[in-house]
Amino acid sequence: MPYRLLKFALNGKHTEPRMFRAPEKLKSHYDVVIIGAGGHGLAAAYYLARDHGIRDVAVLEQSYIGSGGTGRNTAIVRSNYLTPEGVKFYDESVRLFQDLSADLDINLFYSERGHFTLAHTDATLRTMRWRAEVNKHLGVESELVGPEFIHEQCPHLDLSCGGHAPILGALFHPPGAIARHDAVAWGYGRGADQRGVEIHQQTQVTGIQVKSGEVVAVETNQGLVETSRVLSAVAGYTPRITQLLGIRTPLVVHPLQACVTEPLKPWLNNIIVSASLHLYVSQSSRGELVMGASLDPYELHSTRSTLDFVEGLAGHLLELFPFLSDVKVLRQWAGLSDMTPDFSPIMGKTEVKGFYLDSGWGTWGFKATPVCGKTMSYTIAHDKEHELIWPFRLSRFDEYEQVGEKGAASVGH
Amino acid sequence: MKQSAVGGQQAAVSYERRTDDDPFVDPRLTKMKLMPCPINGIRPIQEFAYGGPFRPMPNPSESSDKEWADYVFHRAGEPGIKREWWYHIASGTWFIAERDTLKDEIVRTYLYSEEDRSL
Image 1: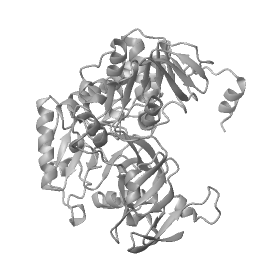
Image 2 (image 1 turned 90 degrees about the horizontal axis):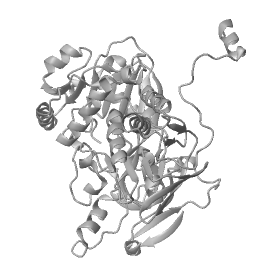
Image 3 (image 1 turned 90 degrees about the vertical axis):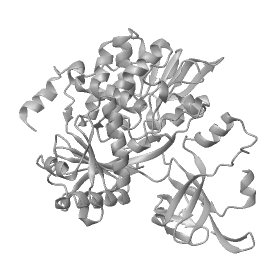
Image 4 (image 1 turned 45 degrees about the vertical axis):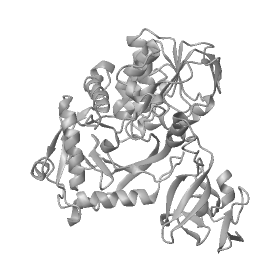
């Protein structure tokens, strides 16, 4: 250990300020209680305090900040979706992301890479042409490109895919980006904290009290908190919260696994996705290849990793980039994905007055972090769904008005 | 493991985990590496496909739009011991497994019988 570091540790004067205050005890009342201190919950707290002047807010986290999906995703940001509702929503998020580092005064390593979704079949090409047209109509940079262009942009890619699934074209989305996901949560958390929001880690919600159809209090393992407005922003844990209130949802939780390789010199500029091969890959600013695949095949509320997953993923990666055969996998992990049947989120008001849902984030939650904060804070402040999230309301299922986004899921789940 | 005849056709082997700390349970069974098939016995998990939760269907002609939407879309998403359809791909056997979706452990497996319809 360097002498300077030792001296610094022992002298007790640590000049570097903490990112957050550590509030000691929960107060007995808050205007708004947010369950979940991930990116979504903290972003909602930040915009509530900044844009709506609601600062008496507690964010309750059963573990630590960003410990759920926020720190487990593969950090891809894009807006080339299929439905007009989805494209508008995610495009607003991309726009917010583009100047978020300056807004939060933290380096998010936001890096625009260009996003390729590869097509190995005519059917995929057809969906991509459809997506490109919807995207262009709504002002999103997105186009169908041929193998020559892909080769020019990413010369390392084996376009024949080992001979059995040749690449016919791709949907190219220049604004597709990656970012440092933890920093998004920390930045929003610090911004909220500076505006008076209290972040309580190690605080688990054990019950929600309702009187004549309205939320009146939240029970936690640190005591009871009175409040009339509660936001659930817990993604993979949503069914456990809605169960407390008896709210029925279509959410089913599946693990989604990911892994990173050892760091390599920078060689992969783009984000490469292949739905047919169940693979998405990008190179982080540290040089690691960050990879994900499709969901685990059955419902499970556990973040265990499997060898099946990493073997399958490595096999498919080698079909695209055969020269990576001696690169080692550094670590693998899993996150909980709360999947919806139409691959769109579930956001907004519920049958219980004062209980708001920000859920159904399946495999597409990270990219939506800023816009969720914006729209959910608006929804809580006005008790009325923001127009961008109205199509994603829970009651769409009872009304048979789903927003079918499956064609744009980055990997065919 | 106990032997029983189901529907008078096939000798089926239903599996039931005895206690939580049963020392005779193969640890690969509790980690979902192996699955006890009622017809073929204990086989690798790769031979099986998940068929979704076991759910009784309401009568379509008698249920309201809302009840039907509830059946079509909504699920019991919280963790717990769930009754599920599983399929042994190699032999084409559909059967029911009771699985703990928090711990990822099989509690029981057995063939579907008419009594299950009412459950």
